[in-house]
Amino acid sequence: MAYNSIILRLELSLNQVNFGDVASAISKAGGDITSIDIIRPGHEVTVRDVTVHVADTAESKVVEAIKSLDGIRLVNVSDRTFLAHLGGKISVQPTLPIKNRDDLSIVYTPGVARVCTAIHEDPQKAYSLTIKRNTVAVVTDGTAVLGLGDIGPHAAAPVMEGKAMLFKQLAGVDAFPICLDTQDTEEIIRTIKAISPIFGGINLEDISSPRCFEIETRLSEDLDIPIFHDDQHGTAIVVIAGLLNALKVVGKRMDQVRIVVNGIGAAGVSICKMLLAAGVKRLVPVDRDGAIIRGGDYSHPMWAWLAEQPQVEANPGSLHDMISGADVFIGVSRGGLLGGNDVQKMARDSIVFAMANPEPEIDPKEAIPHVRVFATGRSDYPNQINNVLVFPGIFRGALDCRARRINEPMKLAAARAIASVVSERELNDQYIIPSIFNEQVVIKVRNAIVEAAILTGVSRRIPHDFR
Ligand SMILES: NC(=O)c1ccc[n+]([C@@H]2O[C@H](COP(=O)([O-])OP(=O)(O)OC[C@H]3O[C@@H](n4cnc5c(N)ncnc54)[C@H](O)[C@@H]3O)[C@@H](O)[C@H]2O)c1
Ligand SMILES: O=C(O)C[C@H](O)C(=O)O
Ligand SMILES: [Mg+2]
Image (tube, rainbow, N blue to C red; front, side, top):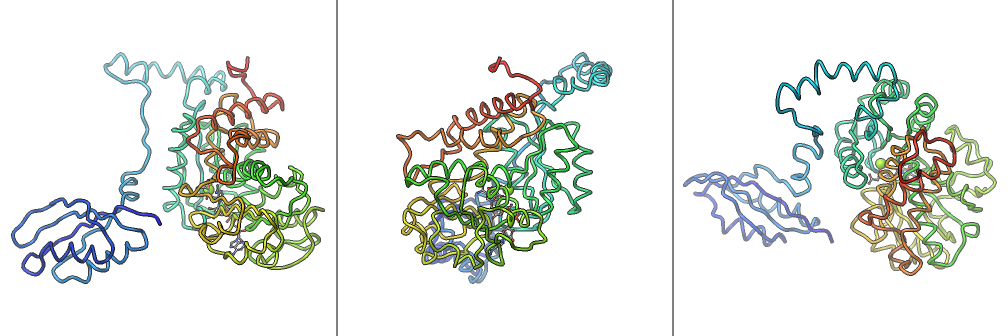
């Protein structure tokens, strides 16, 4: 059970209620008071901040208990998560101070003009004389935010700011969130192209399918900086990494296992493609209406492509039918679709990656008793399979070698690099994938990306440590 610290700002009319009533109401509802701050003292009316430690399942009970008391106005409820978001999670810092007029004339007019002219004469100098070298745009239209769906560009921002924090903390990459107020494919492509000159790479995020495929393909054709749709390729890379290790744990091979992938959107399509490239022979893609079958007729371009693949099964059926006998289940759809009875029908030593965020496809408590290797996208269970293991190192490598693009060999190299962080000795059911705090992850992914970029001819610079 997850616990939270919530802060209740209460206005108390002291002739109607005393603090003892408040304390006992909170305690009866399941909360523990950990501190009390007087915000506004007074003999008749007083305002206090009461911090309460409470299980997230009891949070609403505490709030209701307070509301039911006479003489109390609940001014505000905030929790640590919300407080951590106050004012946003990132800021822009200059790299040098401006202390006097001399400094000013260097970083600004007139000195700056000479630098502008130099870049005008040789545009490649933008990489050495501006932030382009180390800056990535995290671009969304807010249409497929986690598993929350189309919640719009404003509501998407906290996820994009979070990605920017992770880029910086894990890989030293400066990333900036761009939340677009349009869902029109052409307008998104035009806008990203128009803002691209300052960026060394574009990380597309939480853009729903099928528009995300065209947006990424067209931008990759038209721009000479790497375009990477995190939900497609970041996810596919980390899934392959986890699966390589999980298969070792259960002693099965990629070409032997039957794999069900549920949710054939951005992440699901890319996972299916990468599984086929990795040698999977029995694949069952499933979306809302059941299995996507070989020989089926689909208007969705990627589903139509899947229907032509010989490794895709031809039997129709629902997810509940299809999961029966499967060795591996990979969920990138939405939360709460499966129960313990579903995973119980899987083959011996089954592997379940329930990766919908924030709620996985199956409640871990229901899955774990029936499954040999279980993973989610969340940080509060073992085996966190999340694209955060991928995007920082991918862009660190791509920026360091000024890669024009991120191609298939680079993605496969990144997956192998992540898997290799867990040694054979360490590998077990509960540890198939390294922690994001394992410093080896970014280093190994970055090196794998640089090496594969050089080998495949998409790098424009050889980093010092590769010379
Ligand atoms: N753990 C990770 O690193 C990670 C990475 C990417 C995406 N995800 C999660 O995967 C999910 C999908 O993300 P996306 O970017 O691919 O979104 P998307 O909108 O592109 O695709 C979602 C797909 O799931 C399908 N779907 C919805 N309900 C379904 C159901 N009941 N049964 C089967 N299919 C269903 C939709 O039709 C769609 O095709 C989200 O929950 C997201 O948070 C996790
Ligand atoms: O944001 C995450 O935690 C992973 C992924 O990008 C998602 O959309 O769920
Ligand atoms: Mg995402």
